[in-house]
Image 1 (cartoon, helix red, strand yellow):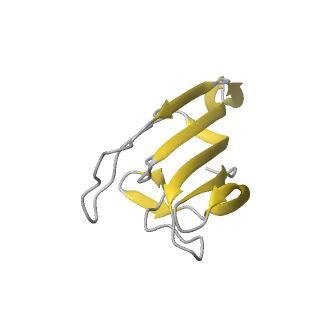
Image 2 (cartoon, rainbow, N blue to C red):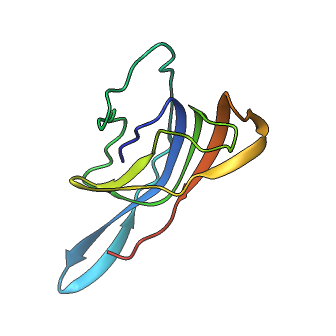
Length: 119
């Protein structure tokens, strides 16, 4: 997972892999509870660049959450994006605005769920 955003807190849970034995495929579940707060106050992200924050290789994230406090305009749109996916195929996540914790025109809190993807 890669993020291109200000102060970010993310939680990753329920990493899952598979193993095969005797021709049968078994699901091997690994639960990863990893939480990190990264403060980027006063930092500059160059235009068209990103900050790499997390890589779950070799595990696939099947359930996760990201909350990020980012600069935003009066219309609650942030110039920064949260990128998710497998490198180099990163895509901007759809940010869900959290009104009670935001100040439009200054800083806004956004929420992103990382949905399950069949592999």
